[in-house]
Length: 296
Image (cartoon, rainbow, N blue to C red):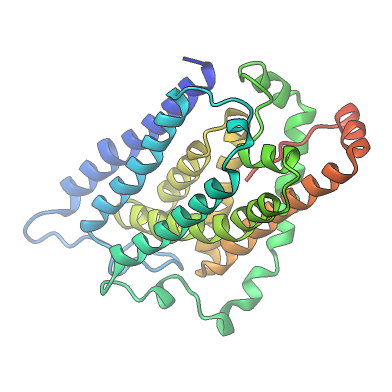
């Protein structure tokens, strides 16, 4: 078992312990029972309608992500990106899974929560709340450059087998099939921002906040978001990004804010990858002078 697998396993176990072995029992002891009325944590993200049934929902998503990581980290290598075969089908299946996760959230909250109001999706009221998204992305990229400048990336890379890139980034770099490249862009720039924000911020963050408080929910959702991507080099940046996304959601009360940030972050990665792909000399020059973790 590699160090990367051990670290991701540990973070996932930490998330499970934080919520299921500490937060939930503490909530039950303090607020469950005759005459006890559970308080609703304050903040702009509404949690009215969330309840005990969402412990099942959180367990389902946690089990799905942890199980997917366990299978992928302990499965056999399939060669150079699965010998580059069936990529279009695999990407379409990934897009299908993203849609399925959104539908599962809708099903879990059906008749209990008005999703438009709970997620703050009325565009007429919230369009201004997405304009700061590029600024957040610039701060994240500056943070990533800082990590590289401190030698963090080089240090972490010494524990990672291979180049440490996300699988989707590798596809952008190695495939020349227009259909594959188009599907990668759709999955990264449309599917991931919508599905992951609905699941991690819209559902998991709000449900965990219901049983704990804002700081706990922010840190928990950020750690889980970083861990489920299954990449040691990206773990810290994605955890910080996950925390920033949760804070943006809480600050604005609208899911459009983290969706916009997530879209800009992924779109910037895709655009940069395309630039490097068609201008490889730029990548060589960048590798000589600075390193960036390209991820989503």
